[in-house]
Image (cartoon, rainbow, N blue to C red; front, side, top):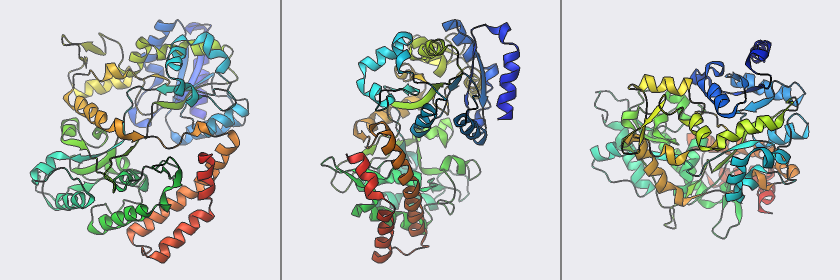
Length: 490
């Protein structure tokens, strides 16, 4: 908080030198990017586009940003606007009900023509950003070309082993066992990582292979449309049995249930080129660009023969932009943000400026105006505001998908395979404020019980017997799993 306060104070001293209309803006920026908002060309370019000045100062420490939000709930206003606000639906409601951020619904129609056009074309998008009482607490990231979080398998390694793409779980286990013991990266070391799954969250993306598509509430949808708590399904025990088998065989790393996620673990683990199976929106997060094309999305039919997948990201990401009660001209802030829902502003956010950061080729494709990976990274840091935490605006999917990159084109083609079979289970905006608060309360306890139970069974800390499994399910029911399902079912 001291850091962000000093930045904003210093900036405010030169307010008159910038513009009498400038508003202050803060939000969360991933520390690993090394991006300094005060030096970013994105904000000066947005000023040139909109005629509106901002004084930006990011918070790059997650704990510090959490403190900022907690202090905001208590009445300490850090800036006029929260940009890359990273607010979940509960935080939106709390800040709105406390009067710390304002309702945007009365202002959008008059000040945001780009956003209004998108919402008119997609009524479900308007529903997603609107509370049950009609208020709109934040602006979203909208995406007609949504990415998918996939399980990616190393097809090149399968080819080296003389194996086809696994079509069953037994075939997958066999392939991963062979990957573990072969020198597939040809470095004369036994450093292959068969499955870079770390944490139960990532492991749950295996559930569709058992015919279960469940969300973060651990709620799954039945073929008849009814909802059920996923661990209550018989196939859920088969899922845990598989994890136990993989843990015993060494397919899952020893720290699989202690690290938060595999991207974190890979930063300090074995070489990133030596991975057989990973979970991510793109292999880029785990392996170098030159290795991306050897990975394919793995789709294995469930017990009934159908192939299903979980749409994790969706086309609407709320909580990206909020106007605080200290903002003297909220309409101006929304006019600035509306540019991000238009083509030119969207490109500034996601690719930079044509001729300086990217250029079009004769075939209509585009490339970054840099010859080296380091140069492209410099563009991402100094010119582009999107990466990591979502920004408000429209994702320029059609433009992005015309990048002249074989690796990116490969990833996009895999997304196109996965999207048609992807499904959403529940949406937070479907609940009333009281039900959402209750769902959050129940889920906090249930997620811990589910994840810890899976980990104990998988590692053998608790033997996976009928009695132990029944007792675990009883503990979930006692903690309110049936009530949680009923909140969404109604």
